[in-house]
Image (tube, rainbow, N blue to C red):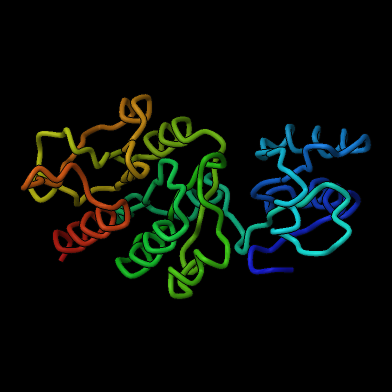
Length: 244
């Protein structure tokens, strides 16, 4: 396998989807591939795995000179945890912190956020299944090998997962540039799920509606926002500061 952990060929990809679909990040199909891919497409749809039609050149760039049979699957380099399983082993009485990524698509940002989360003692990171950077070799490199040291929970529906966290006793906070309360003026000594939005777009509106409160990082000199990983680092270490 190459650095992105790839599985290629119709039978291997189909077997992977049948027996270990949670490890599959994305499936690439050659745009002019003939029949025989129906089961793969159906299994991907059933497991809500993104499918992308691409030219044969793209498959060659991914997997090299192999008999890919028109299909390449990108596989995660870590094992994901189920939210329900994680909640069973966490006590809200200890004021745990979980970092929720709202569609962070840049792999370097993703890796840097994982590294910060691990260093700051965050108990888990939640990522969506769609429009989210995969845990690949670049993420591992940027995270300095810390990816996988804390649980990574992958969910199909971020908003439903936030509600489950609320039901379990968590407060949901959002880092939003339009919030009136500066980060350091908000009490963060709580069982906390903190949402970090995507590069450029921030937190999606529907997801913001699930927040119990939002906080901002004041900006000077007409700077609109900071890099997502920088914002996450400031957020994580303000939580650390308050708890010390």
